[in-house]
Image 1 (cartoon, rainbow over the protein chains, first blue to last red):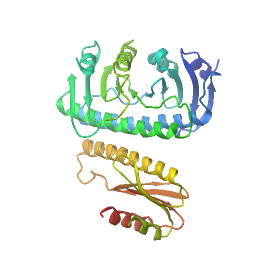
Image 2: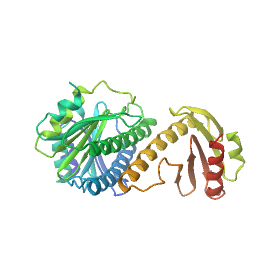
Image 3: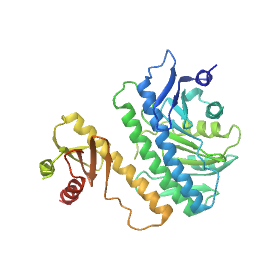
Image 4: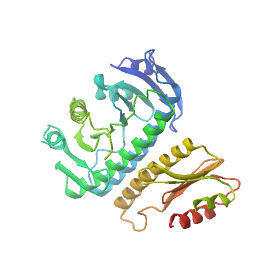
Length: 112
Length: 117
Length: 110
């Protein structure tokens, strides 16, 4: 089973996708019931890349300023919408229904 | 009790707080110095601004956009995670089950907050 | 007043936006709806740049960065430039960014 198929097995998954380090969509799966499109996933991939970069800047600044480590390297970013969330780790992402979302399982699946 | 106080009382949570969308006001509870809480508020507000803009663009051309409105975001590091829903932030340790508990609590308690005020 | 930006080489659109992101006025080759979107984008982008500049100052303690004066997003063919509550579209082949930014700064002060 491909890694995207295993992401689609997460509870409440509507889409799973893979992207380049610049955020360009390279592969994806969308469930039949979902109204997401490849174009929307491509934008989401760019959202992940942009926010992981910003979070990395914040983690670097925070660690240097406060001496508190533990945020760098940033391992993932999640966008939480009203009903859906998108969880990503810089290479892959998955869209989950909020009422079924297991964020920890999603991060574990993304890293496997 | 405020949402951030409830979060700060959860086992494994380092600190939680709330920030104003405009201006520099913030409140917090937990294991952060005042300066760290001020910095955390500035950082969380900046990222929230960014995600709102991104969701606006993401949803500008699609009907039934599943992320509109943006409610929050999560950044995960190797030891710690930061969660933000509405204007409440929470710093927590990566302990099994804690992220899901914190997110559930934040989403339940802050479900009705939509506008950035 | 903001119309005079259109007299510069390569400037095709200029908009002014309110502090809540609403369009005040806009001129050039875009329709009203797209002008509104540009105003909203420029407003959101301004706040994002402000947030990131605040963090840069906070972490480095370097003076002179905040509040930010403006921003430029440069594409291959076109750029978007903003100062204050003004934003404009420019064609990279024809426009002088220095001239556009100088004029934006001047007009934004009125």
